[in-house]
Length: 489
Image 1 (cartoon, rainbow, N blue to C red):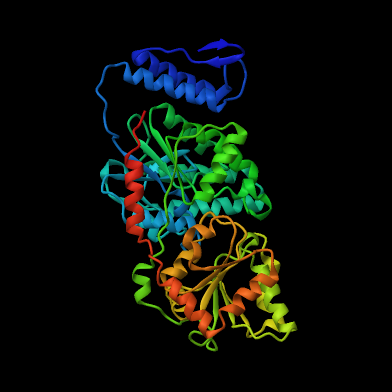
Image 2: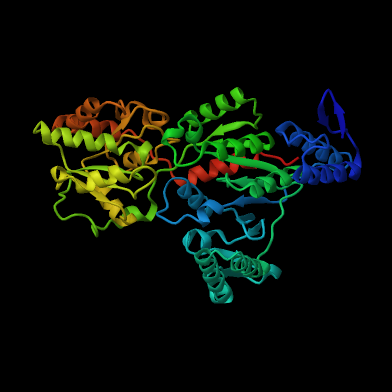
């Protein structure tokens, strides 16, 4: 390393000397920042990576194809609820995994990536993780008998430690958790590997450091980008702007590919990065799938209110949270009651999310809306299939989306949609659906009333028939092609 103009740079060593310098330099960065006492910067990290890559290439070895594709599914493994949104994307990829993909989760106790079985982990997400064990001895589930005793003891000790404020009890719980993890198979991304992260752990600097270390060791990094909500609209986000900014500022400069789910999300990312001076790899856009698979063939009315008749209600699907704008629907239906306007019953399917407690209770408990608005917070996939199949049309008033999957899914069911004309929603179907201003109660009510007419509904159905759903198998094929084109350093 050599200081130049007040900036610490890396020289251009050759052979394994370059490898050693890059690795030692990386450790110095993690422990103390640069030798001049300055914190790590994306430019310094990129410089370290390039020095490492030069060290590998100067050995004279012929170019090689990536040894492994390592896929991080931590976000899905810990997801507690119904599989929608980002967890849905990860789950669909897991179902169609290539035989040689290596799936991992980030293990907090040991601060490392460990290998998991993708289908087993996807199936029991939020309840347990199907770890692959050392020595090729199959799969061990975190809550299975093999680790059950230690797991229960660890959880109980954590509970006692929290209740009594005992650091010794909590420390013992952490030790038990680490002991339980001894048989998990560690995966260390390195030279010629491609590391794919579907959703980074923004709040965990150790996780970020692990990605940066993998980059310095020569792995290519592929990062998914769904939206920039915490940065472009922090008042609508349940996540802090600071952790996302910190994550992107550190990780984007070492990416070899960024995969965005919409042109709107790509534009938000690129514009923010340009304004902040943050480098990043190429940004490619792919389209999400919108087929229901086998669920479409088994709709069930279980849990659906008896008074709902077929083709007689409006459906709104999505977590009840600030950005989804359910409050607009509340005021539209409340105004309709006051003006004696007859709107079709509204069915809201979604659990209570961030900053939505008040509107959730307003929709559920307002006596004026009794029988007019129904909130189903725990509908099964089969019940949701029945609702899609039997609704008159759907509505999606969200103020900001990375994509807007319920819009696409409604069209895949052959149902008309009225949606807000914000962010990515117009990308999904263009002129095939009707739009309204997400801040206009009058426009929203007019859009609903328009589709209560028989001729208007038939015209909307005619447009919907021109929509061509995107199978998830096609999505995964596109992802395999884009990721497959990435070569490691």
